[in-house]
Length: 225
Image (cartoon, rainbow, N blue to C red; front, side, top):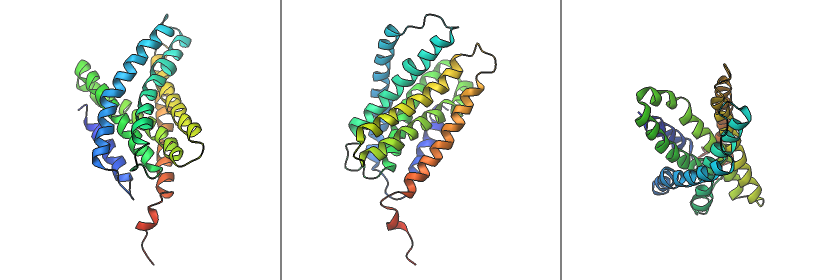
């Protein structure tokens, strides 16, 4: 139950990579790096941020804002970003902008898999069902948004700017999603998390379509009239 939504999203993104699919070996490595290395990096960042910006009052909106955007959102997305930047983006197989989405999602799903297994083992099947429609697709949208910019960065002169833009927007959406869940002491505010997720899904679909249409391999698959 913990892994089923992960598999579905991976298969969905793999099918969306229409014109030049990535090697299974690199996809598997990216997934495992997300599942293991990204979790380790995040844990270390959590430890550092909890020293720098400790949660002093759980009923403070400002305190929860810092936790959502900096301790959780930024830490988790930075750990994924570093793997895509240092492993995937440097590969010769990363040869079109859509590949940014593919590899970022693989890393994100690796992270989500480990996280989901831990939550489900602790809280049971009800948590697995709830996260299948919330946290897991949220991680996918964060990965797609990040990957959209990192895919563009690989082939643009302003690489640093576009890469950091991907990290910024992924952390922004992640932090926003978590923030509305963290301030659950405000009645009904949790709806904001689902609005954020819906916007993320909408933008993710647009990002996928954009990179599909701009693929350098698209013409090879166009029917000859």
